[in-house]
Length: 321
Image (cartoon, rainbow, N blue to C red; front, top):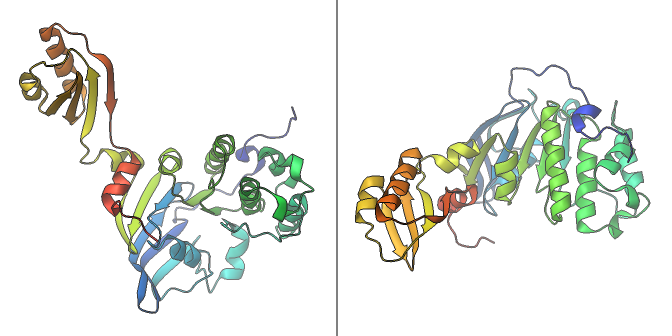
């Protein structure tokens, strides 16, 4: 086992963060002909935090991120990234941000190690490419051309290219798409290390578990507008109707339980479902009711809404092209 640093925070140190947000978007509008891709969107990303920008296909996520990166011009509104205008100050801003692109952003014939060293050569004080390759499990494909890497390996190399220049802000577009569970968890650990080092991360993903695990703040957009924002806990608990499930002798009278727990109660073949505000009082009511019935609640489980449940409630369940 090598003795190289194992976390990004051990590899990089940043200047003391400013009080100004890393990203500030105010009433952003982006049109493509008659299509309004981004419709008066406003959001703020505090420095040193992870923000997950979620939405179905066509919601405006990519357009928003590309405007922040300086690749597209907004039609209206203002965008400031690290206090700079992404278009007017692009030259000064470029060395301070990193971007992980879905397409990889690498030359197809370039070998993995060569490509990362090339990107590192553009930075004033880059990380050691060998350390990143080792950290992301790419040390065995250093001499493999990019086009011959697996999809997951290309994703990990793209992540390494995004952070090798010690950016203050990183844009990650679907960072774990196509990765196996081991690589996904390694990527999650690296994103956490980025945050611990004071790096700001703006993340787009279709993995709700990923957003729930990594994000300090979640912004859900649909049809170019913000439909919800908050911490993962706030989004999953605000107005949430939790569920408490257990098994017991079938056919018990649940009317008393419904009154005691202040919730809806149903039963099917001995499987009992209690729906309402799951809290200590509800749990006490259920166990007391079971005691009065002379039954032992088996397989007692408390479940609340997941971020995926919230996402589907907000954006619908129909397929998007």
